[in-house]
Image 1 (cartoon, rainbow, N blue to C red):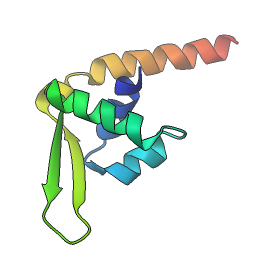
Image 2 (cartoon, rainbow, N blue to C red):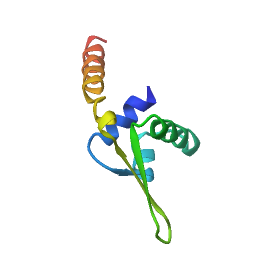
Image 3 (cartoon, rainbow, N blue to C red):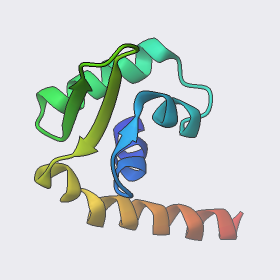
Length: 86
């Protein structure tokens, strides 16, 4: 389920690791790294490393990653409807 939330954050554009960690409140650095690596290995995310002092790493969705948008939107809609019923 984290991957859907993570891809949702990336639907709005490229994000740095720290931005993703902050938006996924409570996630550990280790777990976020594991999920990003898995998503990269599955062709959902592109990881770009800039050769700078204090290396900068950015993540963005691939075309396949963007194809999750309809699934993400449907799950979001369902969640909103579910919360309204509670």
